[in-house]
Length: 376
Image 1 (cartoon, rainbow, N blue to C red):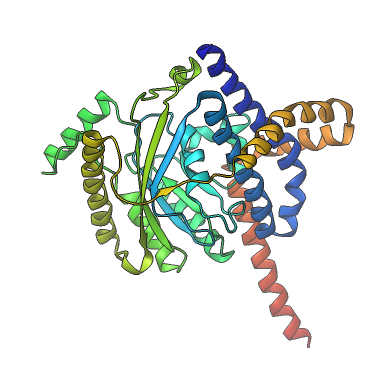
Image 2 (image 1 turned 90 degrees about the vertical axis):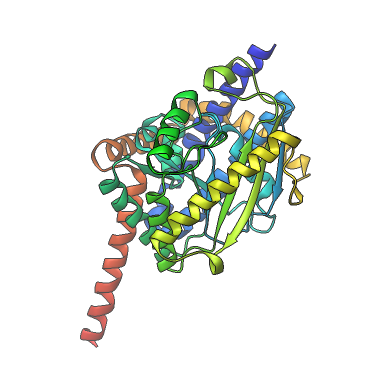
């Protein structure tokens, strides 16, 4: 039964994403040509509503209890979420965490995005949708990633685009091999040895936060600590076999921009201090089985999850029906996919096209404003 549930989970999860891409995101493309901000709003509502689905799946299929404590994530703000990367499957449980800790007002329009490795964008379905949702893809080369961050910061600042961006500063998940590498780094740089986290890479976060603060586009940083009390889901195969944890616990601490340092060096030190706190918090958790501070954040609207479960489970069948019976709908999906693949292989992806399109619109707007006074 566990194996069946594991396979069912991944089938439902993957088919819902692919159906959302074909049925909802492909027809949405013309909106982007009209307004980047409107496109971001609609696509965020669609993607955030999909987040309800993995929340429903983990709860209904596996009885997984997601317990979040600490500070709520505020909508209408731009925030960075800093999380320890316990296993490579953490992303399965981040969606339920966000569902419970984002406050209700404007919840659907407040999207949570990740910083991801560039090859992920090529995965049919998930990689494509995350491009359309404006996730940030990096190449693990600082000279190139710095340019990617610059474009991202400039874009979200210009259109005043509020959302949450999740970062794994450790850069990889905690394994025996990565811990040894982290320990060697600590010994070389006279840093403390950690048992429950890896030493964070500070350059990317410090630069990104500094640039956002300089543009007055960062409202808060959240320190997010993730722990698995019982089963630690090591990899995708582990979950595919139905080995889901019964509990996942996350603790959030909010740091508003008023107390954030402004220089890159001080932001690096800020991140290192958060990881020292995180190590202490996880040691406390290991000893007690709980995060001892902060109120429990929980959304009890179970009817929302039931509706989302029905909607996203049925959607793949609707998309298949439309794809094979409605010619114009099929053509839209095929043309959009061909366009997306072209962007992936020749122009660094859809999110880069979206940013360049806004640049083009802004340049045209400036030229129009310059021409009108001259004509008058």
